Image (tube, rainbow, N blue to C red; front, side):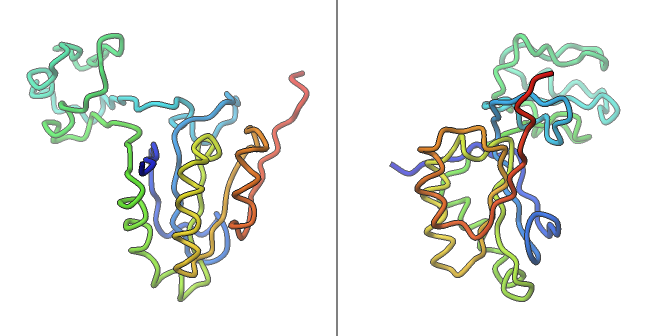
Length: 190
């Protein structure tokens, strides 16, 4: 069975997530809830809908497309998150970009194909791929499948982690990583 990853963003031309030009993959899901989190959209381990009222054109097409009746007629408070199933059927109708699904399942072959599109930039700059999040170790099965494929292409692979995962998720990944940015969280809740 081919694993799939729940990703909320893939950013190209990153310069601060490891050496050279990098593509950073942001996994969805984190066991922590740090007040200073740089990626709060990554906390939930499932897809989420986002609504940006300032982008809304108030055309009403999204309400007609929603099979759950989760979209209200007024601009403010338009999306009723208690009824939204996160199906995403409303998103293609939104020309203003007011609706966005945060988190998408990527089949591993598709993710690898997407990452390898940038290999010329990696080769020219000594860069590569960085896995970040959320907490990428929550999807260690995906990393275990992706790392050998990326390493076979000669890519530098970096992991950004809080370390909030059992050792079993780390052990088999370490030999295949070229670097780790370890964001150690303070162990004392006070």
